[in-house]
Amino acid sequence: MFIGQYEHSVDQKGRFAIPSKFRKDLGSGAVITKGLDGCLFLFTSAKWRKMAEGIGKLPVTKASARQYARLILSSASEVEFDSQGRILIPQFLREYSGISSKAIVTGLFDRIEIWDKKVWTTTVKKIDKEVGEIAEELSELGV
Image 1 (tube, rainbow, N blue to C red):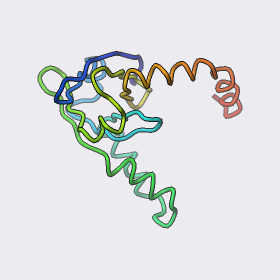
Image 2 (cartoon, helix red, strand yellow):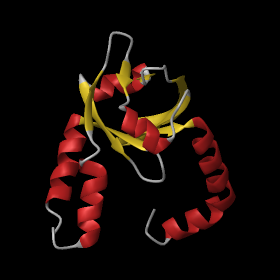
Image 3 (cartoon, rainbow, N blue to C red):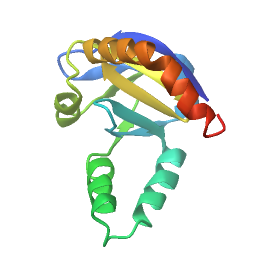
């Protein structure tokens, strides 16, 4: 289970340190891809496989299914950890997410999200303002 929030620097080559707490659960490798709301998703290999299989079962005749598959699957990249626990975030994913020198890595149970620090700060402020409405809506779903 991934929980918590950490700030790390991204070097000129796009290398980014994943917290050691997360690395042990990711194992020897992981998959990074475009996420929603402007972040990147990082999955364990097992979670990625399960999710990709689910996306692969969506009907190709449904436009939203095709678009989602394109977003998630075509932008995926396997990553490995170097000796310092860093991964290389591909340039096109850094451009998509706006990640430059400072990034936030957050644990969200079965996935990790990586955000540009400024985008994360704006996102959290918005969530903080809407937390009451969010909680009420989710309570109706049984959460």
